Length: 345
Image (cartoon, rainbow, N blue to C red; front, side, top):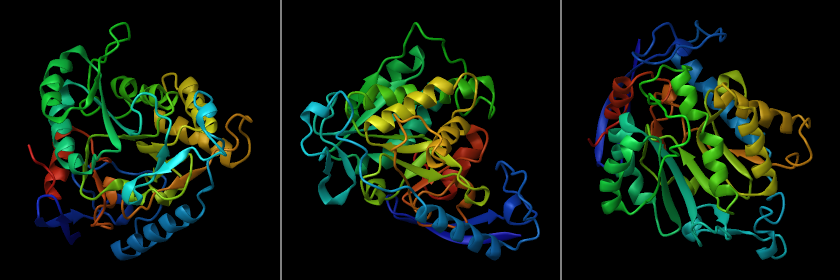
């Protein structure tokens, strides 16, 4: 059975018809290229019931976020500059709060992405859709994961003016890309395992940071959904199996608790997938089992209708960010982005 959905892509001014197969968790069919789930016994649900359940659970997760004010007057590196605990500034047009004490890029917050050779076209596509929302308060920071990708990125840099971070030649080279390396493979883990360290590079300099995977397309301003003064903002990768937050899109303010949290995440990585470790550490905080250094961390779940995982494209058809996750391989990701009218290469 298929669902027919209309999805608008504001940048391209297009309206496309999506014939989205009902996934394993919403019926018996499976979308081509989509990853299947295990341990979820809802095969007998019709698509309408499944969609209703997903929306209800997403709302429940949002309602239970540990939303509160920032945990302290900024990271240790910038506490001396903070006054009365007011270290977060509201960006113009209410586009979310961010640290006023970013020493890397004064007066800005960071949008952080990583790129390797096989990701170049995906990065070009991501940049095409993200550029309208990278305003005067945002600094794009592009990390080159391989020496081979530096020259092509420098060519793109001449047009877009982002900050390019050279690969660490002393580090273990990455032999395969996130897209080409099979999910959970050593190559895949080698890429995502660097994520907490990339975040720490900017957070310890007092910067708020949005990390985002580049198999996404921004069709509305994602910063408009960032409300309040939480330390960490997350997206739910699959609400039907409890809190399973995706490390594919993270917004972090550089409080002492959030820096301690990311350091703990980095230290536990080893050869593990980054997302389970991230959720394990966050769960210890919410269950009051965490060390004092990060016990006060607050987190907020971004609205699922604006940041849905790729397998819920048939449920939420007017998001801020389309994400081609839950699909293995470059071609399946590109096909998804094409299906929503957001492939520009």
